Length: 419
Image 1 (spheres, rainbow, N blue to C red):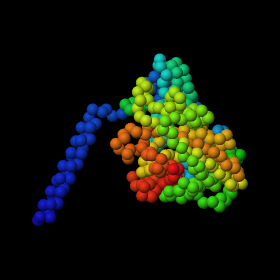
Image 2 (cartoon, rainbow, N blue to C red):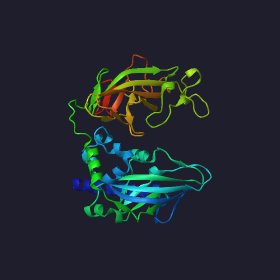
Image 3 (spheres, rainbow, N blue to C red):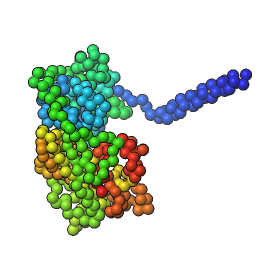
C-alpha cells in the first residue's frame, strides 16, 4: 500500500512540475510575439533597416567547377595542411562537399550614414527546412574582405558561398536541389525576411574541372617519413612541432614591457593589416588607452620567432594559428599579429602557409596583451609573470576545462614551450 501511495505521490509531483514548467515558458514568452516569416520573389528587393537587398546572381555549382572558376580559393579545398585535417574523416569530409550554392546579393544603403553589411547572419534554406551557414574564411577569401561596409546611397555586391554536403539530404532532393523551395534569409526577428531562389542556374563540372579538384583533394602523394606531432603533447623548448612534413622550431621568445621599436621593420600581417601602432607612444613606449585617451592597463608585447623547415622534395602547406598561454596555462592573447619573410606563400585570412621544397623560412608571431588588469590575482589570464615563468603556445585545441600545463596535462591539445 505504501509503495502505491509513493507512486501516486511521485506521479502527482511530476505533473505539478510539468505544469509549472509550461507556465514558466508561457510567462517568459508572453511579451514576445512569435516571429513573422515573409517570402519575397527573387525579382524584388527586401528592405532590412537602411539596407535594400536584392539577389543579383544565384548558381548551384558542382564543387569541381566552382574551384576551377575561382582559383583564388583553391587552398581552401586542399586537404593536407588545412583545417579539414581537424575534422574526423579528414578528406572524406572535404569530398562530401559536392555542391556549392553561390549567391551574390546587391546591397544598397538607403540611409545617410555608412552601414555594416551583416552578411554573417544571412542563412540559406534548401527545400525550406534545411538551414546552412557559410564558411567565414571562404567568404572572406572570395570578397577579399573580412568586414564590409557600404557608404550612404551606395551599393555593394557581396558574394556568399555555402558548401552543401551530400550527407544531409535524400538523394532525390540533392539531385534536383536547384529546383527545390530554396531561399536566403536576410533579416531576422521580429520579421524574418526571405528572398526566394527560384531561378538558380546549375553549373555542372567538366572533365578538366574534375581533374583539378581531385588533384587538390589528394594534395601531393609523396610519402612523408616524419610523423605529425600527436595530440595530447607538450613539447619542450628545443622540440619541433611537425605537421605535413614541415618542422616548426621556436627559436626565441622576447618580452617587451616598456618600449618596442621592432614594429618599424614589420610589413602587413597575414590578414593584410598593418601593425597596430596605437599601442606605441612617443619614444616607442608601449601604451594602451581607450578611445578617450584614458590609460587602461600596463601593456606588454611578446614576440616569438619561429623557423619553418621543409626537408621534403615538394612544396608543403601547414595550418598555423598559435595562441599564447601563460605558465599556468591560461590563454593570454588579447591581440595578435603575424609577420613572415618574403619566401612564405600564404593566403590572406586563412592561416595556411606554404613552404617551398627543401627550404626554411622565418615567421614572427607578435602577441600583445594588457598584462596587469589585476595585480592581486596572479592567476589572471593576461598575467605572464617574470622572466623565470614558462610560456607556451597552443597548436591544437585542448579540453579547456581539463588541461593544466603546470601538471603536464595537455588534455588532447598540442602545446609548445617557447620560454
